[in-house]
Image (tube, rainbow over all chains, first blue to last red):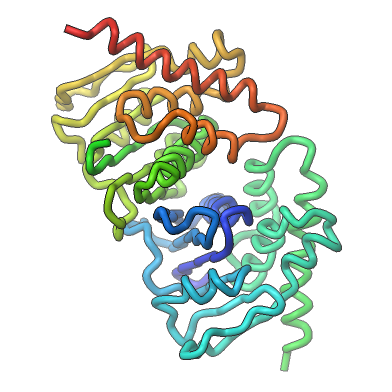
Length: 185
Length: 185
């Protein structure tokens, strides 16, 4: 793993972005890294856009808030427009299919993936989009081994949904693998 | 509500301290406040102690990490000993029954409450101790109206457990109310 990742997920309240970032943090710790996870809320966030963040490092972390994301994933255009502050050119930007990079933002790597569509049509439940995302991010960033990742997911999902969530994770990993395969030069 | 609260929950991995702090943050926002929620993890946290924190303010929050808790709740002696740094004399310390204030720590207000016991024996499920705690904290700090608090709890619990969790919340509120009743001078 790279020595430090600053991951930000931006979506709407119902999309489970907090849980996704908690799972990434815990998978990182299971793999021997340090992690911090956080989110801020304001009255304006009610029913609107929200973000959640995870810092992962190979050193203890004092500060819990992401300042310059190295990976930004956005699920809605509104959340992307709102939470793309502090973005450096080197940030890996992963957008749900159909979203557009806001004007003035100029990241080197923008990857468009049908995350929500995959959750809905392939896994069969739109609410698993956050777990699909966990698989994607881990495949791109190489944070954790797959067994540790599965362990972290299983810790946080309701009993009886294990199969569905493991499929969601697999599909997320596959989305990223397919993308890498296609763009290998 | 007081203008600012810095709440820290310290326990073990399985005690749902993250969820409790997320619920408190969301209830605060439903009540028109600003909130931030965070936790840090290190390799040493595996299977051991963990903490999670919530900042609540009537102003936007830039920094997400608690520096000087105004309210600390501890579920295990180990977690209390480990996560009582930065404690000021004015911090409200709520301890699960049987825990002891570490030497050298001298808070003005230490409240011992049978939180885990109540979850296990009155609510009937030890895993609801975190929701009992949410009720307690809110009753002591006056963060949110009860309906907003219930709304935040219901958003985060598995379907089918609504009745049990509402009971846990009620029992938490009752624990705090009884304590206040008893200590009214």
